[in-house]
Image 1 (tube, rainbow, N blue to C red):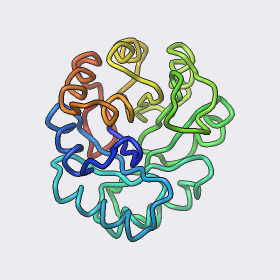
Image 2 (cartoon, one colour; image 1 turned 120 degrees about the vertical axis):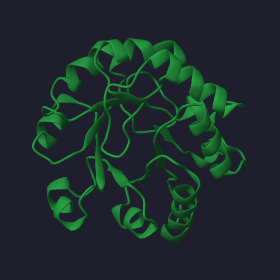
Image 3 (cartoon, rainbow, N blue to C red; image 1 turned 30 degrees about the vertical axis):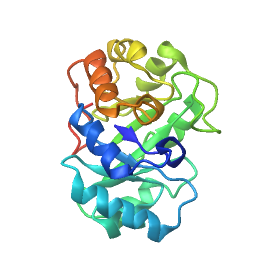
Length: 210
């Protein structure tokens, strides 16, 4: 899963960059443009949904995702609880959830999430409030707390050099920002990550790969 970041695009067209990432093996896209107005997010989401053959999720904004026809939304611990949101969205609409500590895992274990995104696995400069890096073993420990059948993807500072280690400890997939958007060649960067991670082991409904 590739997450967008306006700062890393450096003037490049987001749709073109994401197309290249998908050509390299990315199989899900999360629109994450902090500070953008809802109408701007909706326009970007619609453009990505129209252009990409993979599921598009919208970070934090279920309303925008629904309005744009996106596959789902990714939410944090401070967003409305999934127990309240699930009855309000259509069947098949993906709801992903960020988990960064044991306390957070305990809080949301009964929530109807389609997947958990656990991190930060390693140091990252792309999320100011990401928290202390978990490391590979810390990720594995939190991943084991997910409900049975809920895939867990790893996020935070992941590169082609570390993707394989996360696969070995049970990550169903990886989510990246800088490793793809920060690259001069997003397609090659995505291909390297896909190769390093290996064959997919399950992922959010509607996004069945890494």
